[in-house]
Length: 372
Image (spheres, rainbow, N blue to C red):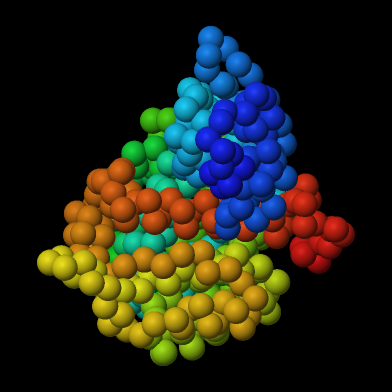
């Protein structure tokens, strides 16, 4: 973009104005109307030949701002220092203490990598600048404790009323797997499972994970059980913010993803978008992309139902090995290509939450209560 602005190769006289113009004209899935439109505060300062960009944003997107800064450095041959503040506010009112926003990660069927995606998205949001927690609501098959590498730990209680969540590399976590054995959880009837979910959501001190400083969570990621039956409907009604659907390109998975979109529509939970997992396989030898489970399916349903395609992830053995070992890919290889994909998906999801539901969003013309 800057090459178009300065095709003559001459440095502009007013670099501060140039930087602001670039931020205004920049476009991406995170910033459909430019960065300036999303900023709640911006200062461009010059200090000892270094341009300092003091930016305050309403959603987690640190990685994209770092990419923008690198592009400015390259194109303008200047030094830039970023000073980022994320002023993330609740987009909908709720009574759950210690949490600003809740996003349910759901799938119409099992086996699509929903839990793996949920954990990586949670860590990716942390990398993007947010305070994050995860709640394992998959009552019948809690896998989050294993994926976080803390399956043998148990939560405590300081007052006998609220449970202290656990901390896994800075991620605040709660799961039925911390409280009962897997074999006990699998024989629960629907009302018992729903009651357990409600207790974990409402009776956890989310802002005070064991061993961490007390701080309110910007986002709580909920790993929902797979399916669209009665238990999923009941749990969805208790989640007051928004949802993201995980699917694979297979026709049967896509049909179930549509069921998931319709389920959340019935309980007035907005769908932020769809993540297509196992979208393609990359050959280790030649790098060829093979679409083993089909191609273009998620794009079709997102266009049909007018929701965002948040991103596409490859079928990659490292993701599975990292999850099984309790060493999440986003943490195991912070600079890797897969981590970059997860981080982009995470900030796209955070951006959609802001643009669709926040009262200060530039797209919010009239505020309609979804809690009624």
